[in-house]
Image: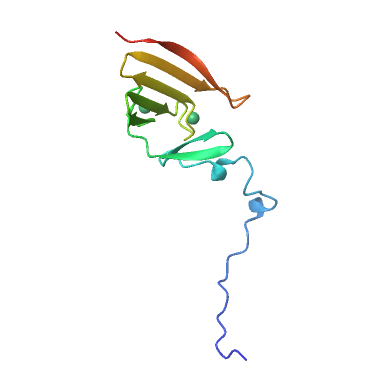
Length: 119
Ligand SMILES: [Ca+2]
Ligand SMILES: [Ca+2]
């Protein structure tokens, strides 16, 4: 048998106030993505990891958006409330057209909130 028994670490007795305390109470934060980490978005039941934010659109000193340059367009993915999930997409096309979509949290649909042109 084992002649090399390692004693389990001895923890101090729990303090009285900790009796019945639920470690998970009040915090679903453990399941939330780290706000400082990558932005992500959900589309068609898939989660897209967009990478770390690289643009500060509201000049509060915290990067909140990711820009992607594609053929003839620049797309900005923005996390407006800084929970890591993108809820605003702005697309600027090289012909001057602008389209902004926002995520409707109740339906999960992307709704066009602004469409126009920049001159
Ligand atoms: Ca910001
Ligand atoms: Ca968000």
